[in-house]
Each structure stands twice: as structure tokens, then as C-alpha cells.
Amino acid sequence: MKVYGDQDADISYISKKVVAILGYGNQGRAQALNLRDSGVSVVVGNIEDSYAQTARSDGFEVYSPAEAAQRGDILALLVPDEVQAEVYATSIAPHIRPRQVLDFAAGYNIHFGLIRPPADVDVIMVAPRMIGVNVRRAFETGGGVPAFVDVWQNASGQGMEIALAFAKGIGATRAGVLPVSFRIAGRERLRTGGSAHGAMGDRRSGGDHDGNGAHGLIQANDLSLADESIRNPH
Image (cartoon, rainbow, N blue to C red; front, top):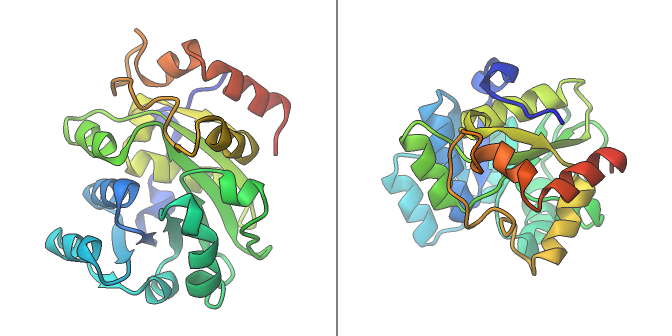
């Protein structure tokens, strides 16, 4: 099975784009900070609450979700699955434009049809296998955490290149990135009782091959997910 590493990803696919992080919570903060540290321009979309205050304290420009969606070229929808469809309908759908990219950290809402993007945008998934605090901690120490990656809709013809660049920006390619479909990732959410990170949440980060990183992911119980993804794309 192909495991994508740093050598497979070219961050130039996103380095001249603006990434709008929609939701500055568990994954949002970690991914925003890692992307910025990787040289990517990042804005934050969040309602006015403590998370917005944290984003400003971290040095980000913070906008309403709708305004951030208009400013971004890549829209990372990192609010909880339970409210993603509502946020998409109210803040993204009225403003979405051709050639934007929608990024998800889980496959649930796309696979089950709760979000239906127009045909002229890319729809990708970059799904870290650990909670946000570990995504950030690993990045800061020179490592990363494994991730699943997929392209649901490839309007630009560069969807996988953009997804891998995004994965590199958050540090995931340092540990290894596996091709696993939205369909499988969406079903996994149900299998793990709603946790987007249940399969890898208790494993250490890192890119070695002794049970850590993506090779540990392959050797452990996620092998069935990855294998089925290849057999049954989307």
C-alpha cells in the first residue's frame, strides 16, 4: 500500500493560496498554527466566542465564518460533524465560487450527502489520526501524526496534489499519509461512536516503523479500513 511522505508532497500547491480555517477548536487551532509555521497564509472564521479570542491571541485575523469563506481559497471546515451541514448551508454555500477547495477532517457529511458542494470546486479530506493538541505538539518537535487523505471531487485536476500539500503543511506527511476514502472515513465515524480520531487517538506520534506513524496504522486495526478503501473507492 502506498504511504505518502514528505517527498510525495509539494507545498507550493497551497503556498500562494489563503486557507480559511472554519472553527478554531480541537483541530482548527492545531492545523492553523502548523500551516502558518509552514509558510501558508491563514485566516480564521469563527463566531464571537472564546475560540475567536484565542485565535486573535495567536495572531490570526478572525472573521465571521461567512466572511472567512469569501476570503479563503481553501476552506477547511473543522467545526464538529454535527453542525457542519448547518455551517456549510449558512456561511459557505451562499458565497462559494468556482475553483475553491473544500477540505474536511472526516468523511461523514460528504459521504452521507448532508453536504453537497457544487461541481466546480475541489472536495478533499485530510484527516489527522490524533486530536489537535497532539497534531500541534508533534509538529513543534519536528514530527507529525499520520492522516487519511482522499479526493471526493477533483474539479481542478489537482485535488490530490492540493490534499497532499495540505497534509504536508500540517506535518502529517512527516509521519505518513494513507489513501482512505470519504466513504470509509464516514463509516468509521459511526463505528467509533462519533470520534473522528478514535482509531489512532491513543498512539504516539512520529514517523518510524515500530508501531508509530502510518506504518503502525497499517499494522494495527486500521488496515481493514485502508484495504477496503482501495477495494471500494467512494
